[in-house]
Length: 113
Length: 113
Image 1 (cartoon, rainbow over the protein chains, first blue to last red):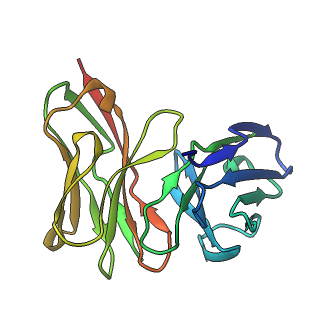
Image 2 (cartoon, rainbow over the protein chains, first blue to last red):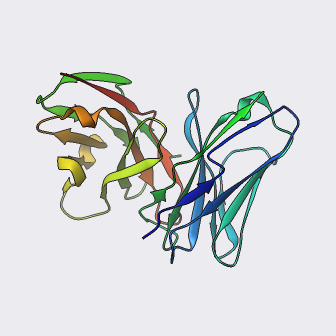
């Protein structure tokens, strides 16, 4: 079966712009989580959505937002981009929320110039 | 707050040698523990997980890990390393109530021929 699909895989933006990343979970998975990976801070949890509701949110500024659609696909948005937002953004899905195995996508690599 | 420490940033082993990657966690309740592997430019692949029960868990690719509550550790082992095991390895702790994982800083494994 198809895995977690993230688009786009690579993108370059300039400071001040905004970006939207997309994640299609594995069929039947209703929970989608987002993580940011940087060399300095490592892997950090951004937020989790389950049944179109945000369940948890990590310690990130309000410029980072997300949503989930009725088909479980999710998007995350970063507004007013800063150089420090350059990172690999990973999406993960699971059947349900809570004590679950997450299946990760290949990530979207964002470079902010 | 939960935390995960991977004391070794880099490890180099010879092909065919045994491997042990260390992981220490801090978590107030029963931990849900994971090891993930990441190859360059890729997402995270689950190697194994511990939720409860037998403290020695088997995973994919010949990996195993042992949960030691008294030492707050969940070390990853492999009896004989293959060149294809060269990658970055992440230990993570999860919570029962959601899909928020806290990751360690990772250990980069290099394999000498």
